[in-house]
Image (cartoon, rainbow, N blue to C red; front, side):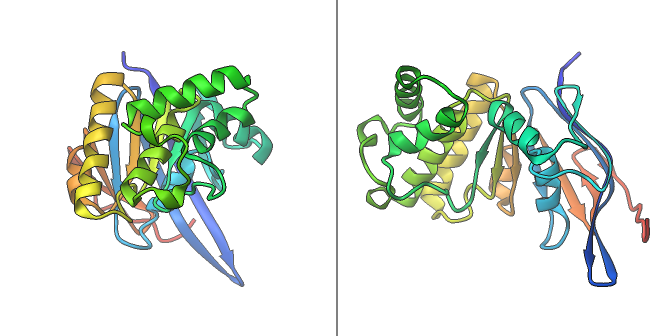
Length: 238
């Protein structure tokens, strides 16, 4: 049986806006299996970013459970969540989020430093993953000395630094031209195929989504369509 890395069970996320309640998620359930490439899609306001926050342990649900490698993290505080995220999940963001004063190698080393990895191993790992994304000759360059596509590849190398179980990518091609976006898509596909890395992407990019094993569509806080299932279930109130 394929191991589940993330399991979201009947998760609601409700925000209070003055006297009103906004239900960003309305009882969604979703599994992510080891080695899977999953794309989460939906229009603005559909709840896909909130879903990403749940899958990535960036937030906890108002109701429901979120299991990471079998452990329910729904009630953990932020400090415990941060430790789990640092060890098990690597993040790739649309804005790259590279520190401008650090070189490419130093940016890749940063998450390892937060996990207490010794300097010698940080240097070795950062070089390894920059070589993997084809930027070993740019290790000493600052972000402003790199193209957008190169910066995103540094961000991918950084996401791999702690050898996480899962990579979570938020619009990874959103700020790239079509050529650079294609390079990133090809690399994610290669990473999935050759390294067996579990990848979850949130995207508007249909081309990127088509590279995934499974596509899940959200609307109004509900999963309304997946690769092999359709549902029109809507819930109007808690």
